[in-house]
Image 1 (tube, rainbow, N blue to C red):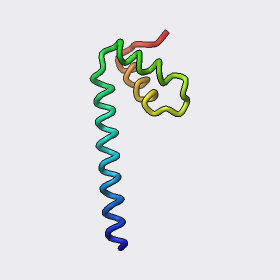
Image 2: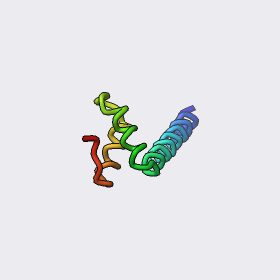
Image 3: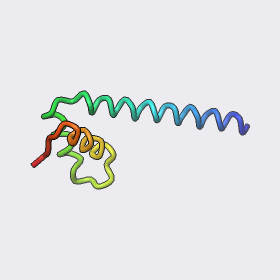
Length: 66
C-alpha cells in the first residue's frame, strides 16, 4: 500500500511539474502586448503565481505596465 501511494504521489508531482513548465513556456512565448495584458489581469491578485511569472518575464524583456 505504501509503495502504491508513493508511486501515485510521484506521478502527481511529475504531472504538476510538467504542467508548470508548460505554463511557463506559454508565458514566455507570448508577444509583448499579450504578456502585458496577462500581467494586467493578474496584477490585483497578490498571490497569483501566473502574475508573478508574467512579471518575471516582463522584467527579462525590460517592459512595464506603466
